[in-house]
Image: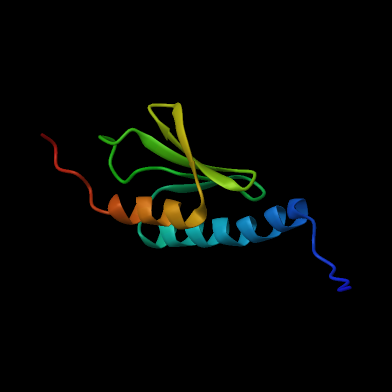
Length: 94
């Protein structure tokens, strides 16, 4: 019988997402997004344009997308990076 010692999921979810969240935060800063570190390991990323009404908040182990202050969906870090990469250009006023 194999005797493997696995970390409990709760420990894994608190270690890796923090590293990923920092990577998203740093990348967003490099791309020019207004970024704020709200508390230790808690981040807020705002859009480049005031015409866009979304924000990304890092909560516990996921990114929360809010649109006009209404929670929409939780994203993992890879999804948050994709979302930000698609919103790097400032939209033109219609």
